[in-house]
Image (cartoon, rainbow, N blue to C red; front, side):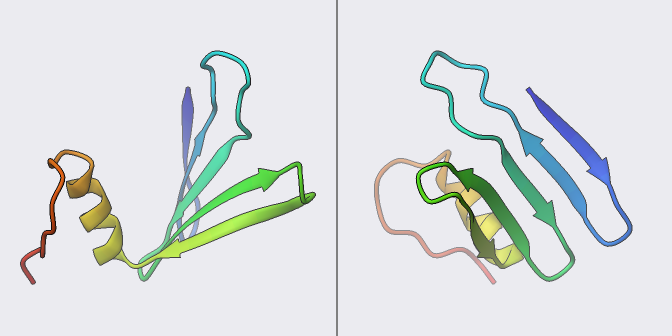
Length: 76
């Protein structure tokens, strides 16, 4: 399951794990004009872990999910 919310400066997507136990914490993806952030609560550290990608990195990640093993360079 996921939700999508359009805020003033970002689109926010929340991914909810509904698979088999053990379930993972929700992942929040915030897409801004210049960066995309992924945040997830880590109960082991009692903190939110955050990863920030550029739009180009997100494009490459999206492409990589559908490619076989190898080394690739995306076109500019």
